[in-house]
Image 1 (cartoon, rainbow, N blue to C red):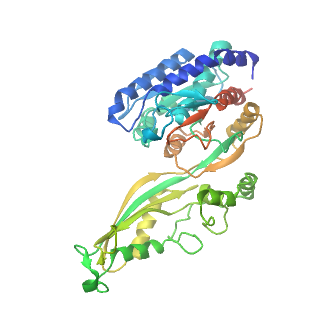
Image 2 (cartoon, rainbow, N blue to C red):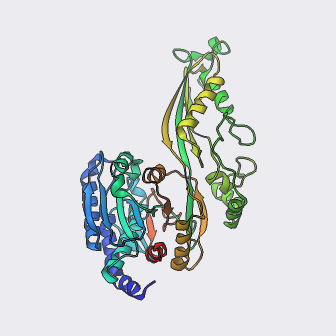
Length: 456
């Protein structure tokens, strides 16, 4: 890193941390109407931080929900434009009694900043703000053009952002979208996430008789919705963990040998994972490792199943209804709406006699994938090596962030996920925190990244 940048960041570090503490102190809980004034306060606070960093055209833009904060610096002619995405909203802090310190009274202990939103996503977002500030307050310019698009609804699934992106596509046009909003592979092990799974969630409701029936008088003579549900669910998977719904795997790419080698290089300890989870062994789709199953393969999981008597003792009835909540994680080119149609066709084909079935799709999100060989990904790898002193590993995430795919599709640009959090930082849980070592290394990495993206 340029010595002028390094000196500035070193001299200003205490101020930067004090500002970050002020940011985390704002209880910007997007899920709560009670905190709507705090959401406005957080957006205005962030807009002011962007202005002080030297960004231009800073605005707090309205949406159907919480506002989006925008700012830009576009004085690098002929150079790429990077759109930086993040979010200023946070999860609720409950249960409060499990926090060691108040969630919105942030403190620094043992090199970690504790507070709700510390790692998700305020500190990670702030690395971008301070990187831009360092360039503009020392060199006076950035190697590339930058735009910021910071939303306030990520923690409630970004309901307003897709329409905002469509409406503001010209303003937000960029060559790359850069996101820092997740964990690295492990402490001291930087990583680049090149794939996110999509999501198709649905509920099955099975109705039998008009009310619960005496199992002695009616058992064996009418359909039992609980049995019908179990049979229907069992028809969706075989003994090898393979999903048996016709067409379910259409659009799923075979893992290349290079990808499988990258998984092996992570040296994941299956036995250790089983011990930590307190299960006899890890299971799943035959022919794939735990990491492959949980990040690069599609799944169908029963999230909840209920029906009949749930109280103490035995109540011998034929229940009148039974239901299940199910989620499918999707990969590669699987489309959640197409998957839902195939699930509905499977249910119709395997529908048990004597019951009526209602199916409702509840969640949808497309998967995201970018080649690890993409030039912007390779530039990120070189930047991590310079900022952290070691090469990053390449990973897929088992989770879903549907808005990432929306960004890529609507704006027609590659998404580069450069995360600086850690898996054990209690994201969404009590005692959320962020390792400040990664605040420093994250800023250094981004300083290198903007240089790497610069065209000669």
